[in-house]
Length: 434
Ligand SMILES: [Zn+2]
View: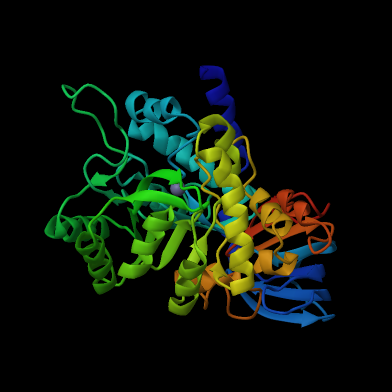
């Protein structure tokens, strides 16, 4: 155990790039550029990067004298990906036991160390932005990991964090233990309108970018095939959470799996629906009308279903059906995986792209679901989501063509974040970047 940990720690230290590289001019020659905006790839594009930002993108183009050249002429270059639903402080949650053990047997500092590792894994996989949707009992440790990344102490993606999330008494683990025990909670437990408002204020005070609450639990199918659920909060409580978050300038993500939970989330004005397995036609129409984003998290649902059994098994097909209906109705889909529900070390989150394409999404739209669409949801359209002048130089590359084989996105070989190269396996002479 100790030996493994020591080796992992050394690997992490050795693989941290030289952060000071960001200020000079870097030029990337992209064999094929998917810029996140254009309908078609651009051949042989030249991307000029300075001070962590993209200053120009030119088809053909001649590099300026003295610039460091990164030759990706045999690769496809894309904007860095956004995973809009992760849990860096969780590491596998297929069974109750796995979840409970993390809260009961691992300290928050230990989990924060793993979270830093998980952030690095996400970056290695090409995810330059994560919306991390709650710490699962690890309090505000996501804010700390974000601060360490932003200060250059550890490598990782840009993080949007939700801190503790909210649910009412008795609806979220830890549950099922003796009433004599005083146990940690996976969320901040709140009951009543004023407690909900106070909790939102506390979370914002401690650094929450987004607020998350759990709309439902206890999922079950009725004979008509609709996935139902027990709704957690009264409408006035859920509305108070959203009103308070919005009043303070923050958006709200809602865990809603069954149609009842989704209905309430839409009724009270949530900004994004997480999971959304039980979406009905009417609810999809409502979400489209209100501009609500849907984050499907297919990877996690597919991954946990066999181990959890019961209702989770038919939920896989329900998710697929909902996704296919959503495509027809043009709901705004943001790619999100629920990484942490599966172990970060076992599954590459880019598998989510493959599910979307298998479920009927065009490959270019799947790429957009992880670039321009979440950029808009996060309010960062001016910074990320596309490769164009003025945006942050968050750039990834793969061998092969993701428009003909989306699975190549699971093998990202080049990662740049804000002009700093964190990974380069695609060119033999990156001139000092690695
Ligand atoms: Zn989640």
